[in-house]
Image (cartoon, rainbow, N blue to C red; front, side):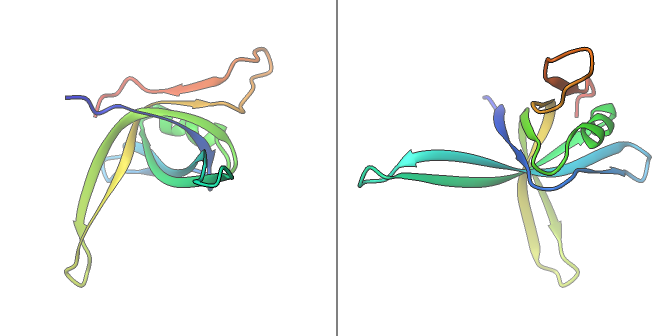
Length: 124
């Protein structure tokens, strides 16, 4: 079986660094992924998907400093499903990308013109 996702999109908001109760850093951010296509009449249309991404460890720190609202980003990871119950007892779930690799496509270091890879070796 295979669970691998590769996405290129734009951040819809600035990522914010958070920590678990045990102190592990993580950030969640959402990207917009556009897909242009032609409709039945031959006119160009655009489908937009909004995808939630979570990044852990040192990569979360780097994502917060290198990604902003509107940044182009490549995300590689796997899909995970989270489930929870609301205070009123309703069951909820969502699917998000657990990122293994994040590349800030707009970020440029002073000495290099290569895209900046935001990667972490921690396996979750």
